[in-house]
Amino acid sequence: MATLEFWFEFASTYSYPAAARIGDLARREGISIVWKPFLLGPIFRRQGWNDSPFNIFPVQGRYMWRDLERICADLSIPLRRPSVFPRNSVLATRVACAFVSEPWLPEFVKQVYRANFADDLDISERKVIEACLGRIGVLGAEKIEQALAPANKDALRSQTERAMAIGIFGAPTCIVDREMFWGNDRLERAIAWCKSPGFGQSA
Amino acid sequence: MATLEFWFEFASTYSYPAAARIGDLARREGISIVWKPFLLGPIFRRQGWNDSPFNIFPVQGRYMWRDLERICADLSIPLRRPSVFPRNSVLATRVACAFVSEPWLPEFVKQVYRANFADDLDISERKVIEACLGRIGVLGAEKIEQALAPANKDALRSQTERAMAIGIFGAPTCIVDREMFWGNDRLERAIAWCKSPGFGQSA
Image (cartoon, rainbow over all chains, first blue to last red; front, side):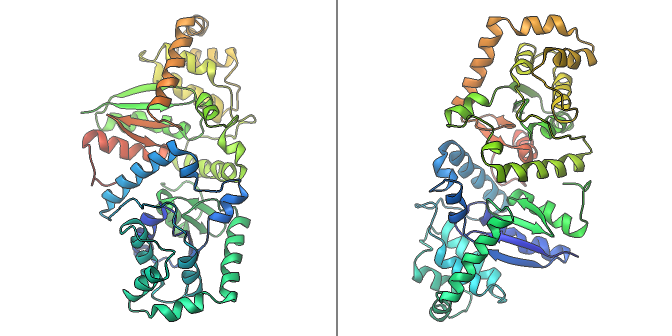
């Protein structure tokens, strides 16, 4: 069975419910997830946007926040609209990128999303990321140092370049073989594609 | 139980599967649909776009066509990518607007979407719209004349203004009371909201 690449961005609103759901969804179907942290900023900039499209197009933004509110309520996950949006996600993403294969990575991902979208904390702050790591029993200071190594910065840059190269333009995005599924609302379809690639499945 | 306003645009890709599904979905749950044809062009223009965002942002466009292909295959409805996109939908929308309460309206809507997205016909042509009407037993020439009356042109203009005023920015959009649901992938949630307004339902 195919593995599922889960491309996510810590500042992305719809990645929050998706990250909360994907682990259980995949486990239930026996599918392995490859976690792919990346940055949307460089991708948006290449499109001529210097901000989140939800800020550039405020009518869409207004809708998105309401839609997200409904989605989180339906899933019973907490949501507090961040006082700054989008948060600078570079530090958190570097940590995720450096430790992507660690068994604690999925829990770290959830902690960062909670900090951003439920606790309204500034995830660009070292102490916030340290606390996210601490809560899952990982020594934050040390991991952050490692994440700031030049080789890891380069690794994240490459990963974001790779996202752009394969046509990723938003988050979350699931890739199964070369098939792309964009959005929290396409997780189920991506999982179904893993089990049975091709058309004509139920969506 | 609340009624569901279904705001649709004949040139909109995701409105095609939505229009194919909404009738049965609503009927099954005993919900009445109010059909709301409108034009996205003036709304996009006010956002500074002179074309479909799927053309302005080709990476998104490429994804959308593939996603639509999967959706239509999953629903077993035919799709042929129109050789011109977006088609000029003004004539078809004027007809829908003029006869929105006729019992044949839902079938006419489906015929126009088929013409655009399955048969690659130019729905701005009078003879194409006449044929759509003819196929459901309606005398096309006469209806089109009525649809071209100044009062009906004004009515469509007002409807599009109304869409903009309530924050509609894409199609399809469902409105239930004042709650907005954007996209083919939100139909089920909109239907659920009709039956039981408020948070904490399953999505």
